Amino acid sequence: KNPANNLIDRTYDLSTTYWGNFANFTPNSADGWLSGAGGAGKMYMRASPATQHYKSRTFAAMSIGQTYLFGAIVHAVELSAIRLYMNDGLTNSTVLRGREFDISAGTSSAYSGTPAGYGMVNLTGGWWYVWIYVTGAGTGTGIALLRFPDATGDNTSGILVDHVQVEAG
Image 1 (cartoon, rainbow, N blue to C red):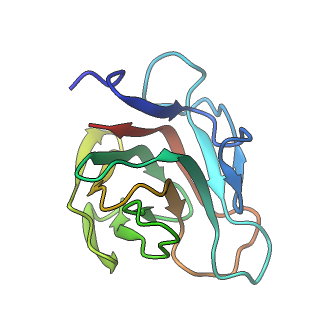
Image 2 (image 1 turned 30 degrees about the vertical axis):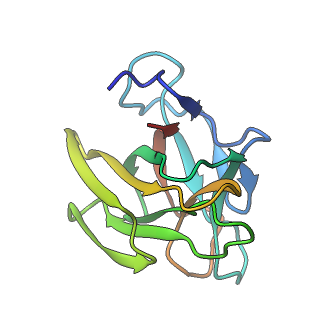
């Protein structure tokens, strides 16, 4: 699939204003997997007792029956588990459909509502492409979240994120 088709958002930098700031992100470390665009950044938990450390992105109204893909290229550093979530567009829906990926073990497990599909691909050198997709059930605002499992943050522990994409497809 051409990644530019029906693109909603594609970024190497989760520190931009489009991505909600409930986790910290330092862009452009030298350890990127994809060529060009400056390499990976590090997403890490803030030093707080909050149980939710995440980056989120809202996007325009979803369409009923349309599929939406959310994927990321990630690498374990101090942490190895990451969760991807999306809603299904139902107005005022708090139901997020997601999956937890252990990028050190190469496994995934159920978490929250069930997405329509999910997967992970080993890219080489500890880098993984993880993804979920949902089917629109309403026309509400879409949301995609990249989140750590609940924990107290230390302002250091995190994962490398080289690329994030949200696509209607």
